[in-house]
Length: 459
Image (cartoon, rainbow, N blue to C red; front, side, top):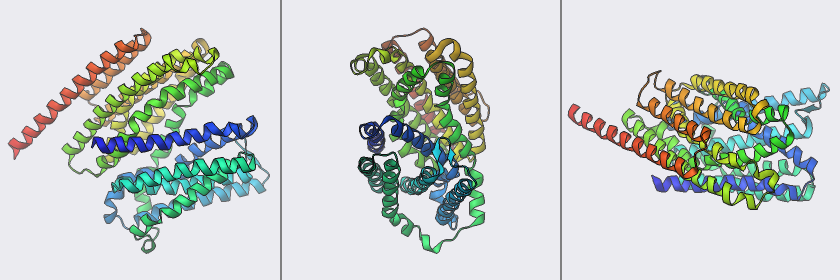
């Protein structure tokens, strides 16, 4: 298992790294105005799929292993996504001819039309990659993931260089997505795609599961960005820039969870035996906590000893907050574990409601604290929101019971809060967290053996 986790982590790290590299290289080819346009394009490129994919990419992870009992599964999902994006383009055309030319700072034609096409082909690729994950077709997943990012890097830089415009980003990205879509036709053949039809009953069944992910995705995305808008309103654009940089570095903690999540998540949904599924979830929790602690150490050392040599003093004044943001993401494994369990149990509406609650709490806390405490307030709001999110998910996934898992997540919340407010040194935080994870591991290990003995006696 660890070998697969490291493989997925390596591939995902390379893919996401190439994606960031693409954006970091663009200022060498564009002026500030065009680069600003690309910032708007990328923001919409990330937000639109939460709406236009209807949450069906999550339905694939949950139900693709059961496709033999769900007729017309693949064709129904594919055509649903096609219809939605066609409807969006038709709506944009109607708005354009009615006199509305610009939305959210972007021209309807060609900007929003091209973004819709990019999200459409990118969404189809995401659906196929999720199928590879469920089938444990690791080789095809690795190849597809890397091809998309490498081709995007090359084509985007090429077309931006040729056009000297942000449009080059859209053209290069779309061509990359289309060619990947063509290469993935092998999965359509495997699914007997041509023999299937759109099935209204199947769509109703899948959409009843997936639609809360629309709100969940929007809320989750907003949870990581609301503080920047509040900072801009109450403070200054400089504060927004400082916080954007430190949040980007601190949130790199997510790289520690990628490999484990991508590999184990489909296994959780495929496992039909409750006890074995719970063991998988516990393994996921321990592994991600260990990886998260390792990432926290690395990020803390880099922020203190490496970054000050690359950035001017105007940036380094905020680097003290990077470890605090990284600490906030140590709550994420509990949230993700509960999230996966709720998805398996098809409690997606609850996921959406809890995500929206956490998002609104984050927004309110930022509005209340930032006018007085600035960037530090945004950091505290991030920690408090992630703590609330993890506690809520653990509490409701366990049917509102105060059990061991709930006590452990509250204990971690107390440890992180005290560490932040009393400004504990990194080595002290690491020592406390290492002891915490060891106790958690021994307790889970003991419970697993006890359950196995009970099963033996029952037999």
